[in-house]
Length: 304
Image (cartoon, rainbow, N blue to C red; front, side):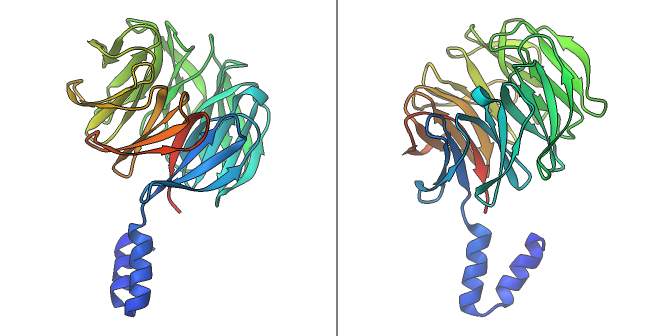
């Protein structure tokens, strides 16, 4: 059922049922937050801004990414990957050494996971919970980004790397190596097609090859339809930038807020130092800061 059919049904329904249907339609999303030292995910409601539940996991849940209707969690220290559906772990994927970060394929079935222990990218089917293939890379594969069609990946080869690997996903082939102007940490492909690269040591970012001044490294980046959101965990800052790199807004967040995601008109970032989830609107205005755990590495949006 699509959104238009849902609204038509809700409008035609009796008053009580109509309210329930429309309530489902406009229900705010939640966030799934990794609680690194507690072997669990916290479920944080983004309407009332409160922790509403917990999902037990394997030890050391670090990064998390939504892939279709599922969430994929990397347990770096034990070499496992969990898949969550319906607020429970439905698969554990074996065969990785140090899984780090995940990029979703737009089909909602496949995902690409960096494995720094074996330095490469692993293709998995998150619906069946299976490894489908892998490609080896030099260095220490960590942060990665995909193009909108899922045909190409860019992978940072360390936490402060001189090189970025380019992988063609159809053949799962390492096709090129880029060398940014500085040692890089995170990266992302903007809606206008330009590659953004953040620094592992320098107070710089690169927008399509143009170097700009930034806050303390390492920075992390995510994108909305017309803006970039760049965090500096060490500085405790989040900046909203236009896609040309122009600063629009600066907001103070909890120190240790590194990883950042955009979705549903909101920005979320978690603090390793304070265990909080900070929620901002798409303009960078602070909406809430929720105490979640002792330490939180990452979060993703979740719609039930």
